[in-house]
Amino acid sequence: ETGVTQTPRHLVMGMTNKKSLKCEQHLGHNAMYWYKQSAKKPLELMFVYNFKEQTENNSVPSRFSPECPNSSHLFLHLHTLQPEDSALYLCASSQIPTGDTQYFGPGTRLTVL
Amino acid sequence: AQSVSQHNHHVILSEAASLELGCNYSYGGTVNLFWYVQYPGQHLQLLLKYFSGDPLVKGIKGFEAEFIKSKFSFNLRKPSVQWSDTAEYFCAAGQDFGNEKLTFGTGTRLTIIP
Image (tube, rainbow over all chains, first blue to last red; front, side):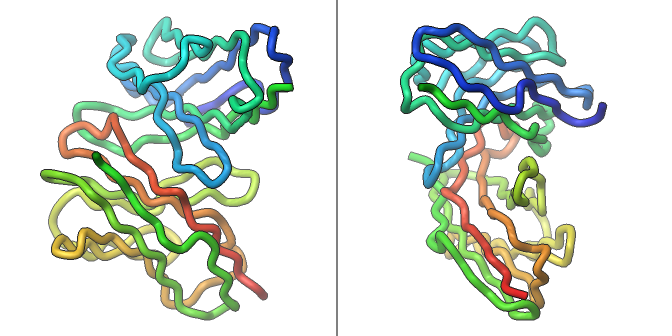
């Protein structure tokens, strides 16, 4: 596989469930990101990891818990979500500090019932 | 606060029409600018980017954008659109030296009528 992959592509969960989103990048980048894409709103940056260290937490509720075990993998652990958390969750990667382009995965469409 | 504005929420054009999508940013200091495109059912892809140099930037699929610093604008243009250009277009801005914190606009949905 090339580029940035995300699994699952679709996820439906109840408010009491615990689930995880997975992202893998095959580009040799050192930075990975989670974004939330909701209808009619700008893409919202959630978390940034640089060399496996979290460098940005954009005031994200604690029910979203990221994990970056290495520079190629990124997880987003979900628990006790709310219906308003339903959105498309996008993963991206880039090479910093060269300031290069961010490359995006296809996203996970999350529905919280 | 840093922000990116895209004033056109939905644009409908006929094939062969010319396209211009507006993007304005509010940033202090040196800024890098991007246009991303999201085709139906596909992931976000980079169309073009401006870091420095010639303010007229050419991207893939015949798209270009012009950085006008005095107007804080980075409008996307294409002289003749095709049905396959139907997609959502996002403008984004980041600081120089490390675009970790990209700020995106709300996007413009472009519909091309055959």
